[in-house]
Image (tube, rainbow, N blue to C red):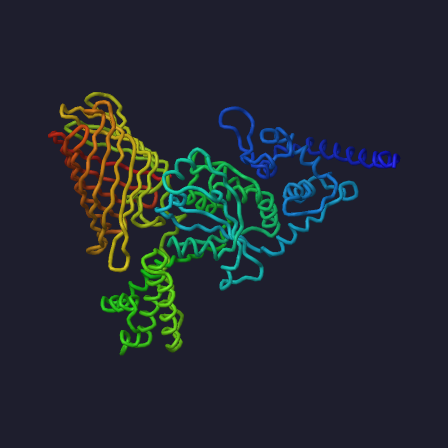
Length: 627
């Protein structure tokens, strides 16, 4: 037994010698400075000081004690780990060659490992996982924005792994790679605040694609766009190996930058380092911008497929019906007998009404508007009635929107304008980093949804020569959803940030304002939507009596786009401030926007105002550039 350590000494010495050779070769070839290594370890240039920092926030992802900030040290430690003795693989134990299989395969190919001096490990768990996926293609999936969920109000991206033996009829059986906040996160305002400071762990996961489609298309009623990508088999394998590495790794989730969109781009850079997709995103990353970035890459896009949400299908069914047929659909969905309701109708129309009623019942069930067991029974009865009809041609799909999400206007906006307020001429400069409002050029965004972040506006008044901050809106969300007999939606709005108010002496002072409300919108003539809200406003400022003003009141308006490039919003808003600084406020406004292509627009704003018995008018013409 005393001879055993002596027998192993030459083995360890040989391994150590070969490790030093590999490390020296890696240093000579400057592998730690390559884009591939930086992508594999998620290094990013520091904003201020020289050097890089790894974005993974899980200490187990780094094999060197200073690996988060030293690429050379991490590379040396990675090579050293590959010489570890074999292990019996379990769910929690892997050999480093398997745990970091993308690093291993790239270094093996680059440094030409000698299998006799560095024996490869079988990595049976990874090989079984890879065989289950049977991947032959990748698809970037973009579910449209869902304004009622803070984590998805800008949309979402995930990656579908298409198997070699799947076709268009079996795509739902594929798997999807997703990056999101880990389980147990909060909702609403709490989620938004905590995700702004990175208080949640972000995790990669893989699940059946049909589960995600049910969540997005069925439950949240979000249209889905599938961007099928041109990756070689070698690149697909490289991406999947890196996804395996990231399975247990935690990243600090940040709502604006290190989110789902950003980290999917980092996977693409591992697959093909020449893409350089993440370099241009600093400060904020909007999912639709990353989709646009991928689509702009030459030869990257193979095909785009539109998958309409359940309520989009229901809208399309109703669009193809007369008023009397829509009434019949409502009565069928209330449980009336199909034999009675459909008697005398051609079978093709019977089929259309039964399918429309079925989708209406499912829609109401998902929203909790009816008891689930009863909805399931009625859905079954409607499908049975439909099955008794003669076989018809395939029902047409809802029309594909003419503008894809990646083809809409870009999310950053710069505005230059000039105007006159209260007999004073001014020039204005405004910037909005994200994302879309009701008057922006149409197409590619959720209709009736407005989400603006960090919208700042400056004005230069000629008579005084001063530059004033006119507003700084931190968040401005507006959901204008027309309500009818089928869709019982509630419209709502919320905004907060710095704004201007007029004192009784005429002084125009800054206050911190939070405004919100709820109401109803009704579709009317042609493209017009008429709306009414009950709004509340809280102003806080040291120039106000008791330093605050709390008000409530109605707002009424009409929004329309008579022409594709022309949008109009006419409104009147009243607020009665009955607590704190007591006063009244009235605003009548007309906003018009004319789109000059996708990335340019002219906007005219007119208003007549009264506040604390002081009246004034304002007019502004501005040019908007989207980039």
